[in-house]
Length: 77
Image (cartoon, rainbow, N blue to C red; front, side):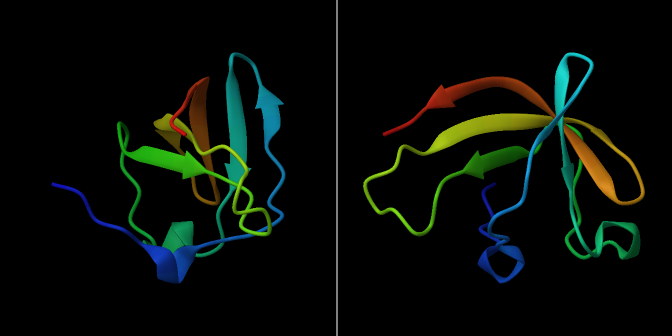
């Protein structure tokens, strides 16, 4: 099943290295908005550049305000 959560779209959110993963702060994560589970797909792109590549990664760990993404992203297009 695939669910698109555009209402939670964030821009200019920095990714930071956390060991072998990338950390991403997600407002509302502690309240379950959005609900993020280990294994969920994350797509990263630059919304200001329609020609920018879209990258895909997967959630490895979820904390109160952060999620940690496996950083072996695949360029989709």
